[in-house]
Length: 135
Ligand code: T46
Image (cartoon, rainbow, N blue to C red):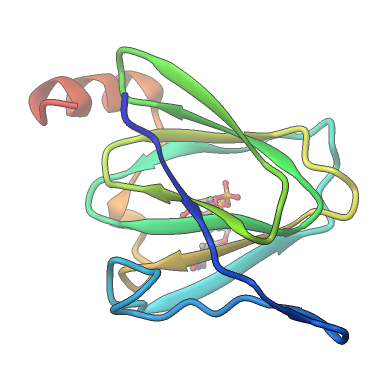
């Protein structure tokens, strides 16, 4: 499985760092939605779904978390622990977010507006989708 990790350029000076994301540029798709997750309990994992069409760029702008990506054959764990490190998630990957630090803020840039129809929240249905879509 090819997991795409992007190292984001940070503009640093005596006031701190600044990372910008734009398309075209660091983000390979047009951004139609932005959301962020915060106040997570390290013991409670999130995600447990795949998307049929959605492309996402996901990062921890504060704190850290473990991102598990599953293509229906293999599972890969990535630690996102820097505001300059992002993961590109293409459609058809089951994802889970575990071990979020107390200060973790997960930022997601998304290629589409919210649609519950785009979610596969059942793992067995995901496996069928992955088999049929060549993941
Ligand atoms: C993802 C991971 C990384 C909306 O109404 N609009 C939205 O744009 C989003 C993202 C969610 N919602 C609703 C749907 C649920 O009723 O917010 C509720 C919580 O969403 P969910 O249980 O899907 O949250 P996570 O953390 O499991 O997953 C989220 C995103 O939904 C998903 O796209 O890839 O973050």
